[in-house]
Image (cartoon, rainbow, N blue to C red):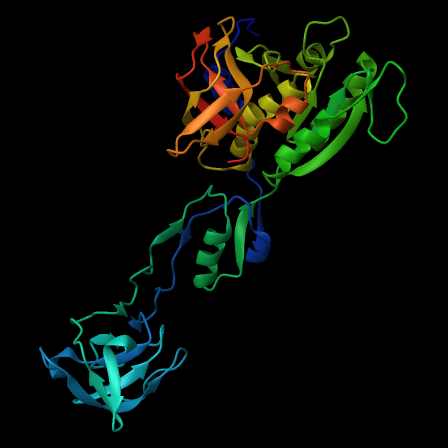
Amino acid sequence: MSSKWLSLEEALTQALNAASAVSDIEQVSIFDANNRILAQDIVANVDVPPWDNSAMDGYAVNTEALEETGSTKLELQGVITAGMRADTPLQKGKAFKIMTGAPVPDNANAVVMVENTSECDGQIIINKSPLPHENIRKKANDIACGDTLLQKGTRMHAEHLMLLSSQGKDTVEVFRKLRVGVVATGSELASPGSTRADTQIYESNRVGICSILQNENVELIDFGIVEDDEVSLRKLFIDASDRVDVMVSSGGVSVGDADYVKDIIAELGAIDFWKIAVKPGKPFALGKIHNTLFCGLPGNPVSSFVTAKLLVVPIIKKMQGQSEYHAPLSVNATIMAPLKRRAGRRDFQRATMVKNARGEWEVTPFKSQSSGVMTSITAANCLMIVPEDVSELNIGDTVQVMPLHA
């Protein structure tokens, strides 16, 4: 285990390299597949559309029978609504009234929109002739049999599931849900809803971590609060290594006399690293017990919140089998207050971002950046990113900001 402070990129690379994706596969209904990870490529077996169809309500015609200039009178041959097909091909000098999505009849090569037609004495008058193939959606224009529609590792959302449904699929193979354990450590912590001692505070990190991870659709197991006791902590982590794929703890990874977590993980398995050059969140630990990956978050609420978003979420995505990890969205903004600080760590400062009259982002960092001030997270709508080597920013400088709820 190295004592060197890792950059965020180095820590993330090591963490992702240590994270092994689950391989167990299960079949679920597409109605239960939202936010699940696809376990195999999906290849089209149905053309979409399955036949040439009308792109709008109008009249199916053959352009060879129309006058190039002026109007053309045609006899109505019939009506084709969505879900039905013409019994006979289009005859010369005639037109089919057709609805959006209905199959185009044989011999027709264009659809005239209703707005370009009129009726007189039972005849259809084409006032503006269409071009050949106008307003016709060709067979397989969207999807052709054999096309790869979705790739293994895709996190599926509404648009993906609609695509599967358009292929007639009602089930899909996905990787099983990742099992994630969450625990808070510290004798000073009391569970919300309980009576706390005079020397205790109510624990808040677990619900924050769980809420962040619920967005990733994992199976959460709450191990509650464990006191700073070596025997209890050792028992907890042995139990967790048999039950979960990832164990996320908060507290006990610093250098205090009662910070046992890191040492116990090292004793039972291994610790890869435990210092990263970010603020807040320096004492983040990564390790493993048997096949269970361990993420040790700092005990301070803001540090726990930030490191869960920056490091735990990417780890979870990788272990779920998601094929790509996309860094959190960040945008450029103009800083609206001067800032001085000691350089050395990348700083994720709580801030508010707004758009000015020109549609440009402006950001104002909070004066207090203490990692124990939870109200700075609830009042913020972004994290302002200050690079490691920057010690001073002036009003008007450009910085990157990461929206908290993009």
